[in-house]
Image (cartoon, rainbow, N blue to C red; front, side, top):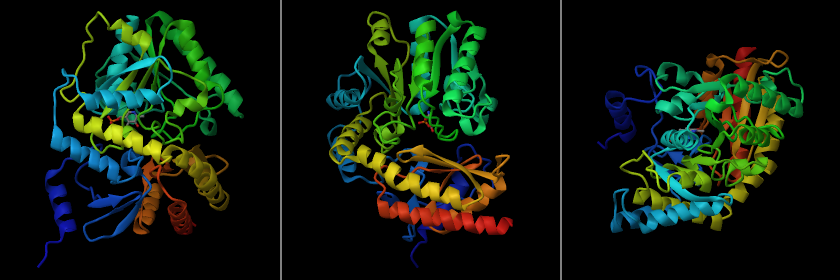
Length: 438
Ligand code: PLP
C-alpha cells in the first residue's frame, strides 16, 4: 500500500510542530506539497488558488524557475558565508534593491526577516537622533521581536510588551474614522492634526522615529488618503524625527509599484523590507538606509548584527527575483490587474452582497470588509469569518482572513482567468453564508 503522504504530513504536524499565534490543540492546517504561480496542491494533487500568497509574501508566485535555479546554482557554488566577508552576490543583491530606491540611499543592512528589519531600523533611528521614543499606529503590524512587537498596534502587542519607549496614535481609516471625518481630505487633515498633538504631548525632543506601514496591511489594507504620508514627512522634518516606512508587506510589487510609498509623494529616512523582495524563497529582510543615517555609522560602530545577515542563498534569490520581476513586467502586471480586474470585480461583489461593507486596495493588495449591518458598519464576528473561510477553502481557494475581513492578496503574477475564477468563488461563498444567516 502506498503511503498517504497528506495524512502523514498532518499526523507529524499535529504531533511535533508548534505553530505561530495559535492555541495548539484544535489546529487543522492544509497540507501543501507543491505549487506553481498562483496555484498550490497537496500530495494527492488537489489544487487550490493561493489568494493569500501564503503570508502575503509570494509576490512572484510559487516556484519561479529563475529564482529556484539561482538558489540551486548558489548552493552548488557557496551555500553559506559569514556576514563579515565581502560577497559578490550579496553586493549585487544590495545594488538591485538600491536601484529601486529613491536617490539618497546607498546602503542596505540585511536581516533574517521583517521583524528584525524594523528592530534594526529603530536601533539606527535611536542612535542617529540620540532620542528614545518610537511612535507607531494602533492599526499596524511590525513583527514579533522585542521592539517590533511593541511598535505593533494590534492585540499581538499586549502579551509581549517588554521593550521600552513606544507610544501609539491613530492613523487614517475613513470607513471607521476616529476623527468624525466624512471625506478622505478631512480624514487626512484631522489624522495629521492628531499626530502633531501626540508628538507635542509626548515631547518632540524625545521622539526618535515614526514607524508606519506605507499601506497598513494586516490591519486592513488601509490605503492612505491624499496628503497623509507627505504630511507625516513634514511633521518629521519640523520636529527632527526619523521617518521609517515599513514596506515589508506592501513593497516589491504588491501595490503595483516597487515601493508602495512611491504613490504618496513621500521619501522616508529608512525603508524596511522582507517578503516580496525574494518572495520568501529563502528567509530575508533588511533596512535601506539613507545617506545621512548611514554616515552616522561611518566612524562609529553600529551595534547590531546577525549570523545570517546577507546570506548567499537569500542574496542570490533577491537578484534573480528582482531581475525576473523587471524582465517580465510583473510589477506593471500587478498594477494593471488591480485596476482592471480585481478592483472592478470586488466592486461588483460589494454591490451584490449585503455582508460587504467596503472593498478597498490597489494592485494585488485588497480587503473585503464584512459587516452585519451596512448602516451601523458593525463588523461580522469570528463565526461568520470562520464559515466564509470554510466555504472558500472547500471551493479551492486558499483565503487570507484578518478580523472581520478577507484580504484578496494573490501573487503579482495572477492571471485574468484566475481572478475570474476566484471572484466566482468569493461570490458563491458569500451567497452561501448569507443564505445561512437569513
Ligand atoms: N512588517 C509588516 C508590515 C508585516 O506585514 C510583517 C509580517 O507580516 C512584518 C513586519 C514582520 O515580518 P516577519 O514575519 O518576516 O518578521
